[in-house]
Length: 388
Image (cartoon, rainbow, N blue to C red; front, side):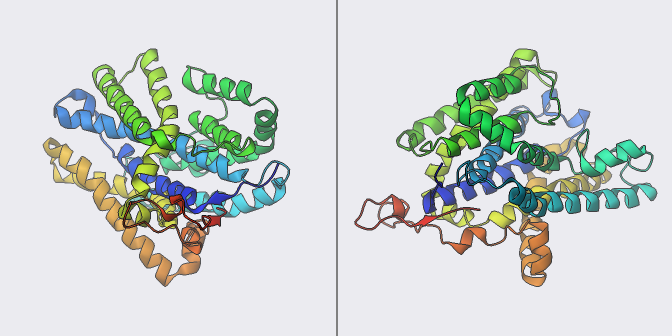
């Protein structure tokens, strides 16, 4: 199969989705305890907003990011896929950052717990068995100590299975996706994966690449698709709010369905947002998105520990909305400082992602129409680029 050429607008939309979805994931991981659970209903509409952001809208991040990874992995076609080269590349860009970020946090937790700090907020690493400690370090059997990094663990597993997945999707695309859809949506054991939706999203991305699906086909309907997706997220949040935290099976199925629909919904939203100057600026921040993803959870836990020492439990909504904003501000500053002061370290920590989105400039915004210039049907062909 021939190589898939990705135009500059598609590249910008992918990068925009990454930064927005990963920033949204920060809200998913804001800590709380039973007394400050949104399902107590103590804060009314504010608690519904928490459910909407953390349990509905931004839960689409995992399948969407997985789909992007599968899409880009096979952009050159099945015949050009070099398994050995891919494994070596992903060991540097995914495995190494995963181990560095996770092990560094585990060491900090061990040091803190030896001083009597952090118990109740994090797993008991000091008294963990060797098997438990190995899992906290490498996510062999459960989530790592830096919980959001389970995504990288399952992504690596998908990459290991990539030749098999690609062969199945190339020969039996609909049957394979239907099988994975059932696996994700219905209460089937996870098996070797920690998050089932990663497999489905990754496989959808492979399907789009190998079968040369035009991902712009639905662009004329982007506004309607975005509206339908946001309406579904609102309805899901309402159902979750009234039935949580112990959801019945049918609600879990509904939640999985909305998350998978978020792949198309988020793509539609990216078209609407990329037309703005802010959207174009955000699309150039690929290295930052990975930095935020790897580092936000330890910061949120630190903020939670400090907050609980202040004794302001009655003002939890203030913590919920301020902690992610403060974390994002700190991560932006530390990312920029590290990139400038220690570029080699920055490259290692971000899997050499720094600057990829700026090597080939994203399309400028037409001041007259507010549309990316490569969407303008003028006499000049749209500039092309291939994302790595």
